[in-house]
Amino acid sequence: MQPREYDIMYDLETTYWWHTGMMAIMDQILSPTFGLVSKLLDIGCGTGAKMKILSRHAEVWGIDMHPRAIELCKQRGLANVQIGDATALPFADETFTHAICCEVLQNLPDDAAGIKDAFRVLKPGGYYYVSEQAYPLLRSQHDISQGAVRRYTRRRLRTLLETAGFEVERITSANTTLFPLMAAVRLTSKALHPPSKVMPEASRSDLKPLPGPVNSLLRSVLEAERALIGKVNLPYGLTIITLARKPEA
Image (cartoon, rainbow, N blue to C red; front, side):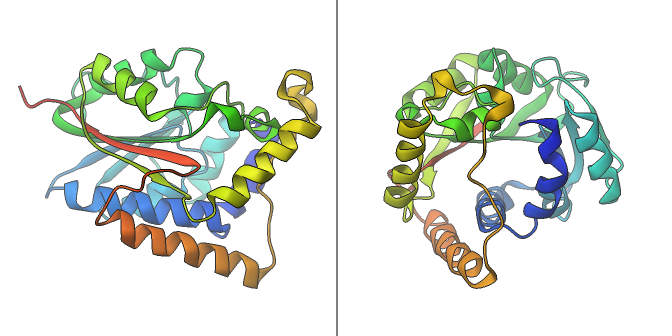
């Protein structure tokens, strides 16, 4: 993601249907895993919206590579935030009971190193929640605007996690209901603006404020998916979500 977008994201993270829906799904999946004393690290915390939601379950910490993101986190009243590299986390081994990594691995030149370092800072039995964009075929200028260098398949994500030592407990998709429409939008964008020809500074995200009624309608679709994901794993969608665990022993 370009630093210039963080002030826009600060508002979108608490109002835009995609962000609020995905955070509700995250909360749905993670809520049963928290204990009486939980300590969570948000890797690539952005402007802190996820941390605010999860702070009712755990002591929350966050890192991000962009100073402006950290400033906006502090405006939200979040104190435990600092600049940091997802592949060299500034924390001791076995510090956290939980780590989340949402749309961050796709931005890393070495995603395996990012997963390996998350494994390092988790306590035995700790949970690692990952959400990433799916289907490499759908890579478009939206991805470039977010700094993403890849999209994932389920097999690739599972292999990366298991190679690092994690046990994968769940893999599900999200943004399933709207997948045909959103895939068509991304494919059209890709045809009109081939990623190989789009410079990062000229790229444009398709995440934009929407009229209130449209935003509410789309958010209700993701809310329905959240209820389903509480019971079953969805087979396809724009997003892949995994819940992995560091072995106890």
